[in-house]
Length: 242
Ligand SMILES: Nc1ncnc2c1ncn2[C@@H]1O[C@H](COP(=O)(O)OP(=O)(O)OP(=O)(O)O)[C@@H](O)[C@H]1O
Ligand SMILES: [Mg+2]
Image (cartoon, rainbow, N blue to C red):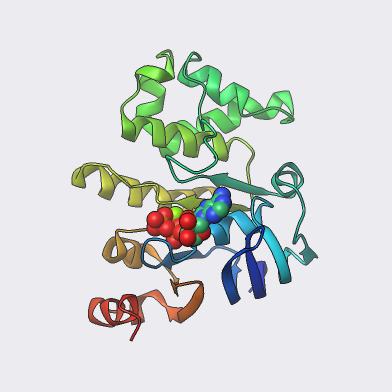
């Protein structure tokens, strides 16, 4: 199976604040890989390390055969990675432009995309999130939390990435909507062929759609294996650090 992302013996953090210790992770083409772990474990830092938003001290971050450790965010994005950050996040980056409509935000996210491709990709986004088509002319500052999250993911999809990094996309959503999001995430993989690294708090549902799972606890990988093989009892034990 073709390898999309391989992380080996990663040591990373922010300046002198060391967060990740000897972390390994593999995402193959067509996989949904679920990353779980307690608050503060370093899940977002692992995603930040991939895209050059955290400091990589040593180890390898290999994207489709190329070592990208330490490359700045814009270069990593160009190489085929889309990152939908946890919201709110420590960087304060607004993930969407409130004064622009849904449609205009999708256009804004398509910078660098060939013109003839743009409308096809917008259709792909509407195919995954039909609600966004209905909301196309609404200023995005008026969107609900769930609608914003759909738009943020849609904007990531406009670049037609090889790898989509999703950091807690269902946080704060109503339970009914959470199930819809998991179906949409599966559609992104199935219909658009995009590999996904998904950080989640909804462990049970995430493991249902995941192929592989990893559990990170205080900066160290405590489990890696089949998502189906990880049951809740085992997860609880891992979270408690036993
Ligand atoms: N930009 C940053 N600068 C300095 N330290 C940071 C930064 N972002 C996170 N940290 C610290 O790194 C550690 C890991 O945080 P991280 O956000 O990666 O955890 P997480 O597993 O994503 O947690 P959560 O489930 O709460 O999102 C924490 O101690 C946090 O305070
Ligand atoms: Mg986080």
